Image (cartoon, rainbow, N blue to C red; front, side, top):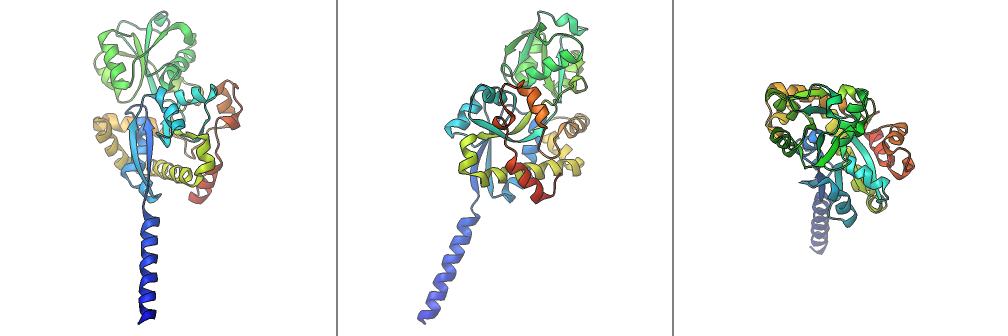
Length: 310
């Protein structure tokens, strides 16, 4: 009888241990604004890839200027914001990118109807999410791609995409860099698209996974789980067009036609393996920081091998 009780007790303890081990880890991801750049993370969330990696993820919209500080303070575990985070790292913030989701800008340069050429933007106001963020860099690269100096415009920090679109309508600014579907909405209202992703000649990521450097030492397993979820979502996006288009329709309240166009743009902009090259990092940082101080792809490459992604 005592032996049976011991066996039952051991079995119960084993079950409790298994249940405890299966409990997902609660983590917080930040994103800058609702846009198609976040679709890989929305896929990971809604299609269960975070859950597969034993993660209970809360996606929180955070001003990009605050995301880096929140990572350092431990208020966030991960951030998807790229441009402002890169600027912080170059400025000395102990943060690192551990994966890149969208490696090429999907922005379009949208201007007021009376503006017909890039050269007419000299001295005009450019509405940006935050100074030196991804959308400002995209606008500057589109202007450069058209053969003009990116310094010809005056940036004005306004906030997320809908706010910038409304500022353009109201005449507060003369141009904005926006991703789909906002560009098409404005075009239908009579605004002009003067440039697009085809005019950007460099890798220009718009979403990623960034972490505090100390987290790489303290919890690499959790970081790798996040990377694995992202890689699974990227693969799912490429293999499931119809489902992803449906998700885009719901996420940004866009039409079927617009969502299909958005899908084509995003799928052409994604990093299939979560990386960009060291040469591309050097261009982005203007060599102000060594590549190893900006990104750490050690866990990413382990995840690539585990998931058989090249």
